[in-house]
Image 1 (cartoon, rainbow, N blue to C red):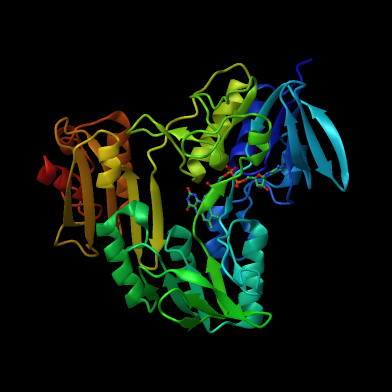
Image 2 (cartoon, helix red, strand yellow; image 1 turned 120 degrees about the vertical axis):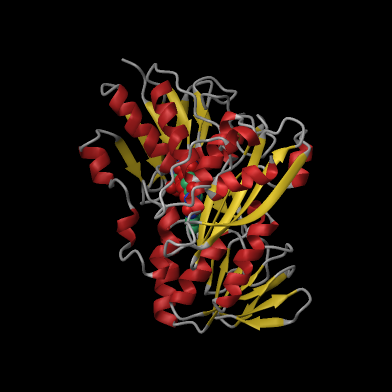
Amino acid sequence: MTAPFVIVGGDAAGMSAASKAKREDPDRDVIVFEKGEWVSYAACGMPYYVKGTVEDLEDLVAVTPEEFREERDVDLRTGHEVVAIDPQAKIVTVEANGERFDQPYGDLLIATGARAIEPPFDGIDLEGVFTLRSMDEADAIEDYVTAVDPETAAIVGGGYVGVEMAEALVERGVDVSIFEMLPHILQPFGEETARVVEDHLREQGVDLHLETAVEGFAGGDAVESVELADEGTVPADLVIVGVGVAPNVELAEEAGIELGPAGAIATDEYGRTNVADVYAAGDCAEATNAVTGEPDHVPLALTANRAGRAIGSTVSDDPTPTGETAGTAIVKAFDLGAARTGIIDPEQACEAGFDPVHVTIEAPTRPHYYPGATDLTVTLVADRESERVLGASLVGHEGTKRIDTVVTAVTTGLTVSELQNLDLAYAPPFSPVWDPILTAAKVLA
Ligand code: FAD
């Protein structure tokens, strides 16, 4: 009998792999060790739980532990932390209920995800200072907002979690300030998009502090203020620290598994690490960038789900590539959407050997005579000589999912002229005859 397929981590990557492996090979034992109690949860929905759009935290769970065990025949062990991997002996050491035991594996998937970065700010342990990564943290933030009814909140970091939490807390009646060290929020989305979102946040009453470094937090037991490097203190009854994530790679590193240039676990196109029969997927692993062909670390949900699913096939004798990442992302900021894909930053494009040119246009999302048209701002980036589409960023009140057209162009290596000639769908309720993406391509070509 084949030794079990063992998975470390029970969220997007881990449970996708478990389900797929069981479907492909129902006779093989699949064991998942998850150190927490939640599995298969949509972390992406947590800001909307705090906002109140999602009523129960349990609603964010896609498949319950019972369903995995009873309907999918996955041997799921929650409250079990894998503390060591011995690749020579092909065993993992697991800690649960204060005891340790060894579990042999035939194939092993490391799907340990990432954790929120906690800078060494003074007062980071004060009550009312949170990061948002786990379901327990989402629960704790919701409880705190309900119990304390904060008047003011400070969000440290203007990334997508910070922006989503700003919307959530404003909806809960809190005065929100965002502190961002860089000149603009949403750095991966580029300056043109960021400026539009920044104006909109201010219109919604968010107090935006750009190029502002936070030094720490002050208070008694609970946080009362944020201390800034240059601007004194700002009152805050609640703080969300959202300054990015770090991949959970320690377990892998200690087992001699190589990390890649982006600091996450290095994998080949099938998700294999440098150690035989050990795979890695999701936020703890690197993936190949679709534009540069180089390893990249883009900790997002589809990358994790898809890589996990592919590895579930591969370990079941159906080798399946995990797929490349275009770094595609989309975020809601109150009434606006912002989306990005590929390479937008000129410096990054130059480093990758391109000579980037770009255009930013505003174009209506429907014909002028049809109700509901709004402007979509499209920034399209291409390589000067080859005309290859490198990336795009969109922002507007509707239509930002149009980024998916550019994702296709970026991933398949289309030129701007080829993008311009795509036969995109048109009817007045949906789009002008020249879709904003085509208009941007026409201007850039
Ligand atoms: P994780 O979800 O981090 O899961 C890893 C699991 O491994 C955890 O449950 C952890 O407890 C467990 N684990 C770790 N170490 C061990 C160990 N040693 N033993 C046992 N178990 C272990 N992505 C998008 O694409 N779109 C979005 O809109 C979006 N919004 C987000 C909003 C928020 C607030 C957050 C926090 C994330 C968001 N993401 C979004 C990112 C997305 O949630 C992640 O990319 C995805 O969850 C990654 O899945 P994963 O399985 O790789 O890792």
